[in-house]
Amino acid sequence: QVQLVESGGGFVHPGGSLRLSCAASGSTFQIFIMAWYRQAPGQQRVLVADITSTGSTNYRDSVEGRFAISRDNGKNMVFLQMNSLKPEDTAIYYCNTRSVDPRVGHYDSWGQGTQVTVAS
Image (cartoon, rainbow, N blue to C red; front, side, top):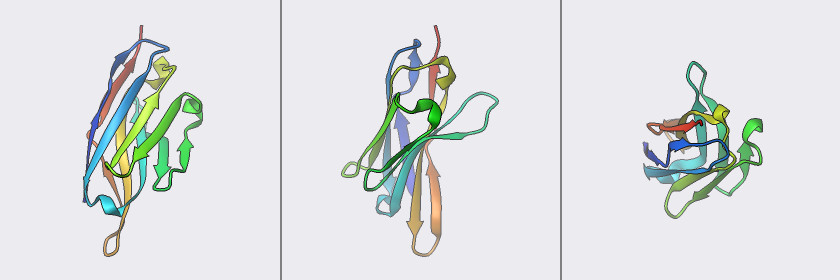
């Protein structure tokens, strides 16, 4: 099992920046992908960005060039630097890890979510 705790959400004006943090604990040795998802009101949860254990990254088209995902394997943390924020970025942001257990197989873990609101 992996437990995730998020922080860094809040209210910001358009064009502003926020940095989200997620700390993982538990069976962190089983994690091979860390990611950020978001869910806007009335919408489905979608992938924002992910990063592998070796540092390869992937971004949703709408955040490409504005957001940057990174991880600190030593501290078992993943971050999302969000710049040039737009009202469309308003959502609950969730930390996610994808892990492999030799008996269970692949499994996902989720944080509690942190609210990001971009508005004037």
